[in-house]
Image (tube, rainbow, N blue to C red):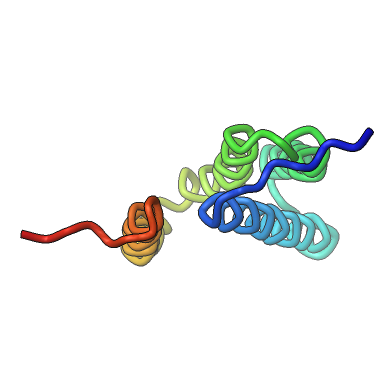
Length: 127
């Protein structure tokens, strides 16, 4: 007998599709970096970290498909393997990354506000 799949809330759907979209973007970025390695040689540590991150991202579509926390950890770790070596070699790259955190923080704040609004179908009462 087939049991019906549990119904997910709208916030769960947003997180689900967002995390898979981020995994696809990471897969594309890491794949392009590895593809350009034949033209511009990457340092060996970048190459090794990129290969590990690529394996993690590809594997996450299977072994993290039902685990939100694991998907988010893989996204964070794969992003860090791409950014940290570059920032260590070129510390000036930290400034644009800090600047990029501003819109990300605004987006996270908006998503958190939307998640609170949709809990009981009514916006929170104001006094």
